[in-house]
Length: 235
Image (cartoon, rainbow, N blue to C red; front, side, top):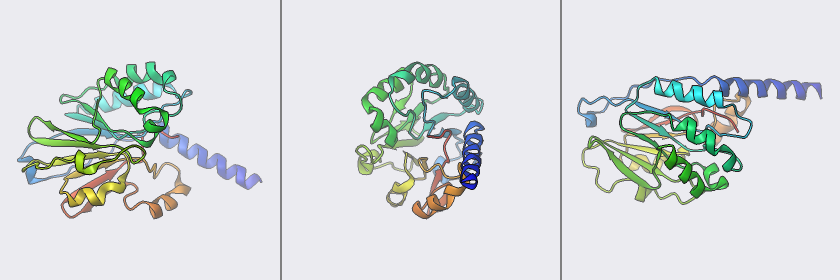
C-alpha cells in the first residue's frame, strides 16, 4: 500500500541519515583505580563494510576518530559483510590510518564469523589492529584491556578477563552487550559494546529495548559501567 511504502521510505531515510552522519558522544568516567591518570579512549563499532559503501564515508570516520587524539582506539566488531576479499584494500588502507598513542584494538563481531574470521584477522594485522580474542593486555601497566569473542564464535569470558588484575581497572570489549551481567560480577570497570543498532531506525527501538537489557547508551551496575553504541554503520 501507499502507507506501507511511505513508512518504508521514511524509515530507510532515517537509517541512512543516522548512519551517514556519525556523531561523537563524550563520556567522562571517574575511578580511583586510575590514580589520577587520564585516558582518552575512542571507541566505535559496526561499520559493516559492503561492496557499495563509499570509501569517503570510511575515510571521514577515521579522520574524525583520529581528531580526538585518543590514547587508545577500540573497535567492537562487525567490520565487514559478505565476501571479504572485495573489501581488503579499503579496509587496510582506511583503518590502517587509525592512530592512537597506545595502540588500536578490536574484537570480533558475529559478522566476522559469517565472513571468515581467519581471513579477517589477516586484514586486521595488516591494518595495524591488535585483535583481542579471549585475552587481555596491559596498557602501560596502568589499565587492563580485555576482549572476548562474539557468541557466534567461541566466547570465553573467564579466559578473556585477567585472573588477578590487582588494583588496575579493567575495560572489556564485547561485541554484544549481553555478557555484561557476568562481566560486572568479575569487577570490570567498563564494557564497550555494539551490535544492537539501537537508535538508528526509530521504529525498531522498542523491540531492541525489550530484547536487550543494555540496548543503547551508558548504564551502571554496582561499580561497573557499560556503554552500548548504536554503531557507525548499518547492514
